[in-house]
Image (tube, rainbow, N blue to C red; front, side):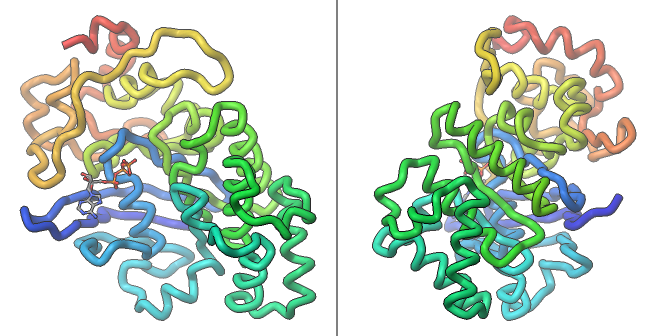
Length: 334
Ligand SMILES: Nc1ncnc2c1ncn2[C@@H]1O[C@H](COP(=O)(O)OP(=O)(O)OP(=O)(O)O)[C@@H](O)[C@H]1O
């Protein structure tokens, strides 16, 4: 596969007084060029940590403990800080969890855009002015609004502006952390449409971090499902969401409303992900899994169960029989 980014056995730990929190504990997946990959899982599964580790924007207590992340042929894990900084914005860019974190509230949007284009991109001021207007148009904003302050924008417009800012220097990969979470469903769809359009028009690849499987279904080409710091299933969106092989993915599918149509009973997965301070041995989902068997006390490896469709579950071969059961609320009631 023509992967722009190849992540292998990546582990990211936080140092805490109670010991290391293994927030990402052996994650492997690929991001092919020109594709949108959804990184999905419940809160606390390590998605944001993984996205931030790839960008190299981590708190001081976090460190990459193992693994590799090869982007355009170079391992991000072993790059020096200076080499990393060169990639940031130019080859890979980040849209943080809330747009207000990307935007400076006391600077007009145009000035923020100019700063990136002139100072980081080395454009002349006239070139940067033209490019800023282009970028605003690209995300569906009127260039006249470059004179506005962030507070004059709605949530959706702010998200568009932070995407425009991330795109300023033509990155090949955009990592967006929960880009539509705080927005209502109609605006969510508009932003996801913008992201899809940009992907197609600019040939970008994106990693879209989200807790919402409906967002993945709507906007992504591929999906990586994370649970308790591990990848439990990955593959093309249609294959994974239409025929999930992991019970956690099956459970997530029941737990979210569809972005395009309401209806269908929502069934939550009982319980919560385990603490990553002392993660359980064996399959980490076993304690919440309605299909757990004795074998689940051993750790299942992530294997290619079907072409390009990876899963870490001892019972993956039985998935066709388990899926109908997983769609029943009674199965998940403890
Ligand atoms: N700065 C930190 N110090 C210690 N532990 C942390 C820190 N940040 C996150 N964690 C822990 O790391 C694990 C993964 O968190 P992370 O935020 O990456 O998950 P997530 O799936 O992105 O969830 P969310 O959507 O809530 O951000 C959690 O157990 C969390 O408590």
